[in-house]
Image 1 (spheres, rainbow, N blue to C red):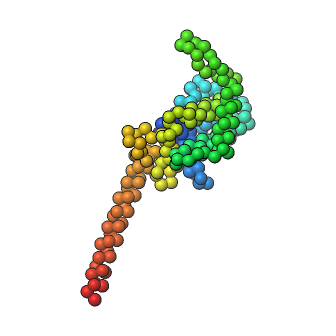
Image 2: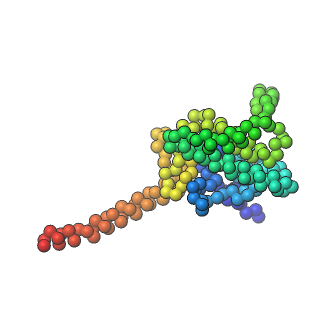
Amino acid sequence: MHRLREAETHRLIAGDAALNFANTLNGHARPAGHEYLHDFRDLALWCRHAGLLSARETQAVLKHAAGHPAEAQNVYRRSLTLRESIFRVFRAMAVGGQPAPQDLEPLNAAWREGQRHAKVSLSPEGFSVAWDDDARLGQIPRVISSAAVQTLISSKASRVKRCAGEGCDWLFVDDSRNHLRRWCSMDECGNRAKMRRRQQRKELAVSERSSRPAARRKSIS
Protein backbone atom coordinates (compact mmCIF):
# COMPACT_ATOMS: atom_id res chain seq x y z
CA MET A 1 0.00 0.00 0.00
CA HIS A 2 1.36 3.41 -1.01
CA ARG A 3 2.08 5.58 2.01
CA LEU A 4 1.25 9.17 1.21
CA ARG A 5 4.01 11.71 1.64
CA GLU A 6 3.40 15.09 3.28
CA ALA A 7 3.58 16.72 -0.14
CA GLU A 8 0.47 14.73 -1.10
CA THR A 9 -1.51 15.66 2.01
CA HIS A 10 -0.46 19.32 2.28
CA ARG A 11 -3.54 21.45 2.99
CA LEU A 12 -4.47 23.53 -0.07
CA ILE A 13 -6.34 26.27 1.76
CA ALA A 14 -4.94 29.45 0.18
CA GLY A 15 -7.52 29.69 -2.59
CA ASP A 16 -4.73 30.02 -5.13
CA ALA A 17 -2.15 27.63 -6.57
CA ALA A 18 0.84 29.99 -6.27
CA LEU A 19 0.03 30.84 -2.65
CA ASN A 20 -0.45 27.17 -1.85
CA PHE A 21 3.06 26.61 -3.22
CA ALA A 22 4.43 29.38 -1.00
CA ASN A 23 2.74 27.61 1.91
CA THR A 24 4.73 24.40 1.38
CA LEU A 25 7.14 25.92 3.88
CA ASN A 26 5.75 27.20 7.17
CA GLY A 27 8.30 29.45 8.81
CA HIS A 28 10.21 31.11 5.97
CA ALA A 29 12.20 33.20 8.43
CA ARG A 30 12.91 30.35 10.86
CA PRO A 31 15.82 27.90 10.41
CA ALA A 32 13.57 25.13 11.72
CA GLY A 33 10.53 25.96 9.58
CA HIS A 34 8.30 23.05 8.60
CA GLU A 35 9.20 21.82 5.12
CA TYR A 36 6.76 19.81 2.99
CA LEU A 37 9.01 19.39 -0.06
CA HIS A 38 12.17 17.47 0.76
CA ASP A 39 13.26 16.44 -2.73
CA PHE A 40 12.27 16.48 -6.39
CA ARG A 41 9.80 13.62 -5.94
CA ASP A 42 7.95 15.63 -3.29
CA LEU A 43 7.91 18.62 -5.64
CA ALA A 44 6.39 16.61 -8.51
CA LEU A 45 3.84 14.87 -6.28
CA TRP A 46 2.81 18.20 -4.78
CA CYS A 47 2.24 19.65 -8.27
CA ARG A 48 -0.07 16.74 -9.03
CA HIS A 49 -1.81 17.15 -5.65
CA ALA A 50 -2.32 20.87 -6.38
CA GLY A 51 -3.61 20.26 -9.91
CA LEU A 52 -0.64 21.86 -11.66
CA LEU A 53 0.39 18.59 -13.30
CA SER A 54 -1.77 15.72 -14.50
CA ALA A 55 -1.12 12.17 -13.34
CA ARG A 56 0.41 11.40 -16.75
CA GLU A 57 2.68 14.45 -16.63
CA THR A 58 3.76 13.58 -13.09
CA GLN A 59 4.70 10.05 -14.10
CA ALA A 60 6.65 11.41 -17.06
CA VAL A 61 8.70 13.89 -15.04
CA LEU A 62 9.41 11.33 -12.31
CA LYS A 63 10.59 8.85 -14.92
CA HIS A 64 12.82 11.49 -16.51
CA ALA A 65 14.14 12.54 -13.09
CA ALA A 66 15.14 8.95 -12.29
CA GLY A 67 17.45 8.98 -15.30
CA HIS A 68 18.70 12.55 -14.77
CA PRO A 69 19.20 13.00 -11.00
CA ALA A 70 21.49 16.05 -11.33
CA GLU A 71 18.95 17.86 -13.50
CA ALA A 72 16.16 16.94 -11.09
CA GLN A 73 18.14 18.30 -8.15
CA ASN A 74 18.79 21.53 -10.06
CA VAL A 75 15.09 21.97 -10.84
CA TYR A 76 14.23 21.25 -7.20
CA ARG A 77 16.62 23.93 -5.96
CA ARG A 78 15.40 26.45 -8.56
CA SER A 79 11.82 25.75 -7.52
CA LEU A 80 12.59 26.43 -3.85
CA THR A 81 14.22 29.73 -4.85
CA LEU A 82 11.09 30.50 -6.85
CA ARG A 83 8.95 29.61 -3.83
CA GLU A 84 10.81 32.12 -1.67
CA SER A 85 10.37 34.79 -4.34
CA ILE A 86 6.63 34.12 -4.52
CA PHE A 87 6.34 34.22 -0.74
CA ARG A 88 8.21 37.51 -0.39
CA VAL A 89 6.31 39.19 -3.23
CA PHE A 90 2.88 38.26 -1.90
CA ARG A 91 3.81 38.79 1.74
CA ALA A 92 4.73 42.39 0.94
CA MET A 93 1.39 42.86 -0.80
CA ALA A 94 -0.48 41.22 2.08
CA VAL A 95 0.67 43.97 4.44
CA GLY A 96 -0.06 46.79 1.99
CA GLY A 97 3.47 47.21 0.70
CA GLN A 98 5.31 46.80 -2.59
CA PRO A 99 7.63 43.86 -3.29
CA ALA A 100 11.31 44.64 -3.59
CA PRO A 101 12.79 44.36 -7.12
CA GLN A 102 15.24 41.67 -5.93
CA ASP A 103 12.32 39.58 -4.67
CA LEU A 104 10.57 39.83 -8.04
CA GLU A 105 13.61 38.81 -10.07
CA PRO A 106 13.55 35.01 -9.43
CA LEU A 107 9.87 34.97 -10.37
CA ASN A 108 10.53 37.01 -13.50
CA ALA A 109 13.45 34.76 -14.46
CA ALA A 110 11.39 31.57 -14.09
CA TRP A 111 8.47 33.08 -15.98
CA ARG A 112 10.66 34.32 -18.86
CA GLU A 113 12.30 30.92 -19.15
CA GLY A 114 8.90 29.24 -19.26
CA GLN A 115 7.68 31.51 -22.04
CA ARG A 116 10.40 30.12 -24.33
CA HIS A 117 8.31 26.93 -24.46
CA ALA A 118 4.96 28.64 -25.02
CA LYS A 119 3.09 28.72 -28.30
CA VAL A 120 -0.33 29.78 -29.54
CA SER A 121 -2.38 26.78 -30.58
CA LEU A 122 -5.59 26.59 -32.60
CA SER A 123 -8.32 24.09 -31.76
CA PRO A 124 -12.01 23.77 -32.71
CA GLU A 125 -12.80 25.76 -29.57
CA GLY A 126 -10.50 28.62 -30.55
CA PHE A 127 -7.00 29.85 -29.70
CA SER A 128 -5.15 28.86 -26.55
CA VAL A 129 -1.63 28.86 -25.15
CA ALA A 130 0.07 25.49 -25.39
CA TRP A 131 3.51 24.28 -24.33
CA ASP A 132 6.29 22.33 -26.00
CA ASP A 133 6.50 18.78 -24.74
CA ASP A 134 10.28 18.97 -24.57
CA ALA A 135 10.20 21.25 -21.50
CA ARG A 136 10.53 18.05 -19.40
CA LEU A 137 11.51 18.74 -15.79
CA GLY A 138 11.54 22.47 -16.44
CA GLN A 139 7.78 22.45 -16.80
CA ILE A 140 7.47 22.47 -13.01
CA PRO A 141 8.92 25.96 -12.40
CA ARG A 142 7.13 26.99 -15.61
CA VAL A 143 3.64 26.08 -14.38
CA ILE A 144 4.32 27.50 -10.91
CA SER A 145 5.69 30.82 -12.17
CA SER A 146 2.83 31.12 -14.66
CA ALA A 147 0.31 30.59 -11.87
CA ALA A 148 2.03 33.27 -9.75
CA VAL A 149 2.06 35.82 -12.59
CA GLN A 150 -1.61 35.17 -13.33
CA THR A 151 -2.43 35.88 -9.69
CA LEU A 152 -0.34 39.05 -9.64
CA ILE A 153 -2.23 40.54 -12.58
CA SER A 154 -5.66 39.45 -11.35
CA SER A 155 -8.09 40.91 -8.82
CA LYS A 156 -6.91 38.28 -6.35
CA ALA A 157 -3.72 40.22 -5.70
CA SER A 158 -5.51 42.90 -3.70
CA ARG A 159 -7.11 40.26 -1.45
CA VAL A 160 -3.99 38.36 -0.43
CA LYS A 161 -3.48 38.18 3.33
CA ARG A 162 -1.05 36.61 5.76
CA CYS A 163 -2.34 34.39 8.55
CA ALA A 164 -2.54 36.15 11.92
CA GLY A 165 -1.90 32.88 13.78
CA GLU A 166 1.05 32.80 16.14
CA GLY A 167 4.01 31.16 14.39
CA CYS A 168 2.13 30.81 11.09
CA ASP A 169 3.11 32.71 7.95
CA TRP A 170 0.79 31.06 5.44
CA LEU A 171 -0.79 33.25 2.77
CA PHE A 172 -4.33 33.11 1.44
CA VAL A 173 -6.86 34.94 -0.71
CA ASP A 174 -9.57 36.51 1.43
CA ASP A 175 -12.82 35.61 -0.31
CA SER A 176 -14.96 36.19 2.77
CA ARG A 177 -18.05 38.36 2.34
CA ASN A 178 -16.78 41.19 4.56
CA HIS A 179 -13.07 40.63 3.77
CA LEU A 180 -12.23 40.24 7.46
CA ARG A 181 -10.74 36.75 7.35
CA ARG A 182 -7.70 36.56 9.61
CA TRP A 183 -6.68 32.92 9.64
CA CYS A 184 -5.38 30.54 7.01
CA SER A 185 -7.67 27.97 8.62
CA MET A 186 -10.32 28.58 11.25
CA ASP A 187 -10.17 24.98 12.48
CA GLU A 188 -6.43 25.25 13.16
CA CYS A 189 -4.93 28.73 13.63
CA GLY A 190 -8.32 30.28 14.40
CA ASN A 191 -9.19 27.74 17.08
CA ARG A 192 -5.72 27.92 18.62
CA ALA A 193 -6.10 31.70 18.90
CA LYS A 194 -9.51 31.26 20.57
CA MET A 195 -8.09 28.75 23.05
CA ARG A 196 -5.17 31.05 23.79
CA ARG A 197 -7.50 34.01 24.48
CA ARG A 198 -9.71 31.81 26.67
CA GLN A 199 -6.69 30.69 28.69
CA GLN A 200 -5.49 34.28 29.04
CA ARG A 201 -8.91 35.34 30.35
CA LYS A 202 -8.85 32.51 32.90
CA GLU A 203 -5.37 33.46 34.06
CA LEU A 204 -6.41 37.11 34.35
CA ALA A 205 -9.48 36.17 36.39
CA VAL A 206 -7.38 34.02 38.74
CA SER A 207 -4.86 36.83 39.13
CA GLU A 208 -7.61 39.37 39.94
CA ARG A 209 -9.21 37.07 42.52
CA SER A 210 -5.91 36.40 44.24
CA SER A 211 -5.13 40.12 44.49
CA ARG A 212 -8.44 41.15 46.10
CA PRO A 213 -7.83 39.90 49.70
CA ALA A 214 -4.45 41.57 49.81
CA ALA A 215 -6.00 44.83 48.74
CA ARG A 216 -8.69 44.62 51.51
CA ARG A 217 -6.12 43.86 54.24
CA LYS A 218 -4.09 46.84 53.16
CA SER A 219 -7.13 49.16 53.36
CA ILE A 220 -8.04 47.89 56.86
CA SER A 221 -4.59 48.44 58.24
